[in-house]
Image 1 (tube, helix red, strand yellow):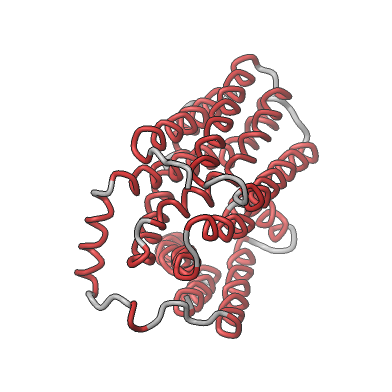
Image 2 (cartoon, rainbow, N blue to C red):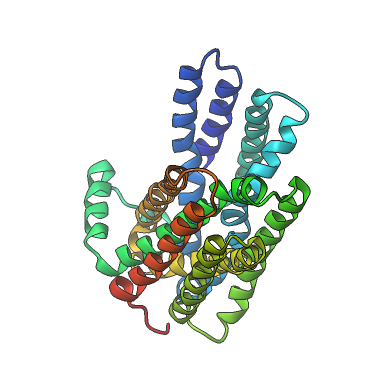
Length: 318
């Protein structure tokens, strides 16, 4: 965690002083690897300490960061750009990275005892990843989460264009809608922690995906009809469901591989990011002047996410 955070901060400074686009792209690419350690290690730490419903509860709390960050980041970036150039964004990232490194050094203890640590090196990690990819249930949860993340990225990448350019919504009104959706995600994540006292994460995951798929179809219906307000309501419901999908699917996936929590979390995060990254260009390929491309990608990913959990993972009440 410490190596990743310090490396992330230093690479952000390299991006800030990059003399050309090639250097910026290369530094940013490597920075992605450094930043990925935070997501992986945070999940592994929770799995080191908790299992089952308890783990799902703590992942619900992590939703405050994992879920809100990609939704809030564009707004924060725009705010920084009001006071400086694009280089100021990377200086801000460097400061955040160093502050997180200091906090981790001060308050984050080691959670994996020496006797439980893997000594297989890269070859052992590769073998573990191979076995993970043959675990149908684990792969089902990975695809469930990745496709849900892709639907979220379709919303993030396309909503500004849809509401402001297609429907003519003002910048202030769109910012309010965007903020309300982020609030829905946070609230659902915290409600998930309470609901886990009564229901297992498997039941909550399937129920939430059903609601999310229905809301996603509502988004598509509103887009086809050309009416922004039913679309906005359906988006509010859909984004809220992500706050419950992420913690439950993560807990169920990692619960199967406690002895290799770090590798399982790394593969989960990597595949989630790869699948999610496909959503933005798909939205762009749909053309301009219509809300349908964003809505179609979002609805398709949401329905496929539900299909993955029902056909591959098939969770039971736990």
